[in-house]
Amino acid sequence: MAEILVYVDHVDGAVRKPTLELLTLARRLGEPVAVALGNGAADTAAVLAEHGAVKVLTADAAEFADYLVVPKVEALQAAYEAVSPAAVLVPSSAEGKEIAARLAVRIGSGIITDAVDLEAGDEGPVATQSAFAASYTTKSRVSKGTPVITVKPNSAPVEAAPAAGAVEALAVSFSEKATGTKITARTPRESTGRPELTEAAIVVSGGRGVNGAENFAIIEALADSLGAAVGASRAAVDAGWYPHSNQVGQTGKSVSPQLYIAAGISGAIQHRAGMQTSKTIVAINKDAEAPIFDLVDYGVVGDLFDVVPTLTEEVKTRKG
Image 1 (tube, rainbow, N blue to C red):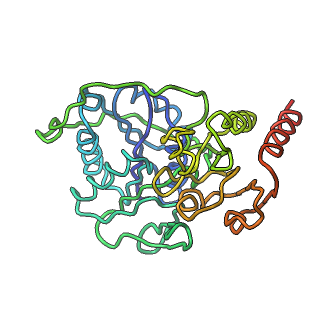
Image 2: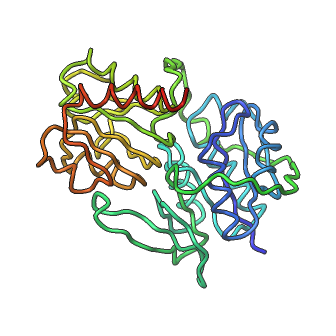
């Protein structure tokens, strides 16, 4: 069976959820071979094996932490040359897409970004993508070289499928290009204790109707009751009510959770472009003619200041 290379997104050995989703997709195409780089790479093996990795290639070097993405690209290229895979799968983060694009150029292959599904085809993997603000769904495949595909978070379930997970050291030699851009400082992002926005299974977002930074507390309360991430529309971000890092939309982050709750968001095309692939969409808005109601699964016409706190209490009651 063909081997599928999976790039591992981890933090000091803690594997992030999108990688486990990639292993689910990789098993549809062949045998997953995981590539873990940097500090704690060897510690990822047990989790990766539990989710289907037949082999785990690991490498650790100071270059992975001290320089920008090129060392990781060169390591992934070394893994590609060692394995000769049928496809390379990478999580669709900002860094992941840059790594994938650079790899595709180096190996002379086509690339597909932001896939939301993968299936085996007679002539290679077939990727499903959402296009034009999710107004269309397309299916495509790479016609030249080994497919390099980035996949959006929440595109597949995380499924246990125990495999050998044999750990092998990956030999990597870095070129002069790998050390061309050095990282001089890092500032840890302040943790909220909530899930990462792009990876969260549930997202609760507030918009112009929240009417002030202080009122985002009710959005956060609902999110916390559901174990969800907090998002915001561009209008709310532009008004200074919530950080840009939480913006959902064409000029913010694209999310595809199992459940998306939009409170006080009218549903402009810019916002829809970033959340329209959500599996279930719920909108709360006092304007019955708001465009958001055109795409929702469930809509509540009402004042969010009445509806959201009531919903929060109901969630807490049912959970408690």
